[in-house]
Picture 1 (cartoon, rainbow, N blue to C red):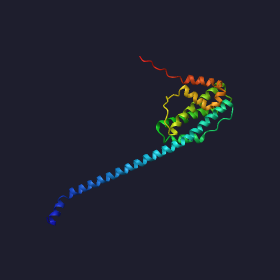
Picture 2: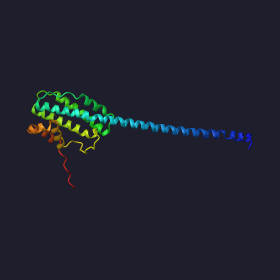
Picture 3: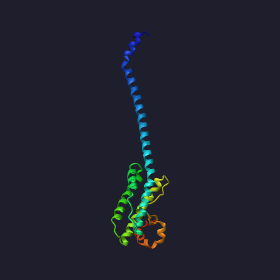
Picture 4: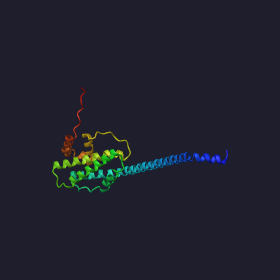
Length: 212
């Protein structure tokens, strides 16, 4: 085969050869772009995971601060101590972590912060509250403590207890004991009769449906 014949053959197939080379280059480019995209997605996923872990790591301290705020609220209502200071650091942290934590817990955190604002407004607006008003604010504190407790397992990366969406009477009364402290509860059990009655009225157990 002479040089001229080779040159002639290449000339005749030039367009096809160019197309094949272009296709090969395009396929290589697509493969490299996919590799880069997968790498970017992996980095993005890892970044989101780190942000979620960082957010969860901040939650226990924030929840503990709010728990102390609840206890201080109850000391004001039960023992006449000074009104509690605003848990600025705790509430600010919880507002910030909503963006990064899992959706279900983000909704719970939003609900917690929202209820805190309601509870705090009522408490700060109170002046020499009457007995029924005190009972209502103790209920507010117990509900706030319940919402706090329901986030602790997630915040500590522990197995979460399955609970009904609406707190039960038992859960609310347990939260009330935590809020006022077990010692005060034991000493002044009768003083909490009104708030327990409120809990029983607002957290009625669902009736079991009998089989047809």
